[in-house]
Length: 504
Image (tube, rainbow, N blue to C red):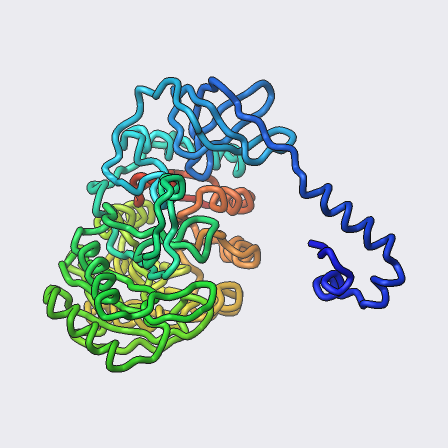
């Protein structure tokens, strides 16, 4: 943005004062152009528009003439007015301002924060309909992106629990709470802006203060509210996300299927006395906690992967259980956030692998070795590879505590570890189980898999689009034998999908 004086113009744009003075007319033209460009024509309101479908990113879809319009929180059958906020040649984005008619599909959301916090975009849709939409998402990705021959894709395996299903939640403390449109328009002053809740999408420095979130056991809400109230009572400064200062910063709560509870409090300043007093009060109020830890984070980001975690009370881990196997989960460990549904997902993967007890299995992106250890009883040997060294150490511990002796784990970047030499040394796999991050696999990894030619590949993915992209590359040597979507995240648009590929 150009400033209104040569001095400010030079300061913000790297131009010297002398240049600005010598070229005053040119500078004036630039300022005039900037002023004109800022006067954007307001976008229209589309009236009496019917919502006809659901779309990507949890949005709903309407069609107006030749234009597709995406809006959040709509349901097919709604008749609405839409205020456009972005308009391109063939599509637009907007928000619903008026309901003329509400869809018969709609259900009442129990959450008072729905449509504001941005976490659950489908709470207004019946769960059965959500599953239909998720299956459609999988079918669309495989047909449109992979463009391969497909078997019949079955219905999604739905989650047994559609509320309080998450085993992990992360909360943020902030001194700049997000004010809703209703609060802003009320004319009331809100001097107390301390908040404990979730980041508002698109506003990194604003946090919505949460009363109750329905995605984890309610004890998690009680803990968050307790820490917030304690902080206010004892004048502990809530974190300022812009100034990067303050004491109360974030809190993670993990609740295992075994009932064990881990709490990790992250503070932005080293205050030993205040930290100890708060943690003692927390454990006194909630004796159910089995692992209480804290982290001092003075960095500009919230990640704690590179910071030491200090144990205040209890054990350094909690344990999940699956078919009699125990899995230790530490403060930095990855574990599927829906414990009950993770068991369903891993059963599908194991079934697709078709193990007889004689196979050499490669488990790529093994994380803490959950899948590797889960399938090890039915395999001759399992080799797990993962980028994060700490996760590999957890995987080894999980094998040891379960008496599993036919696993090996290696840490490193997948494209650097999984090489032709690695496969020559450890053996050509009979089965490859792949569970990459949302971005999918690096092309070098796909090429190595094609050269390794395992008879069966089981591809587990949290992103059907990147999964379909990788399957299109694998199609030169593999065909899709079976597909099974599994819902891990009710009331969101996210879906896990398992695909079995067999060598042609």
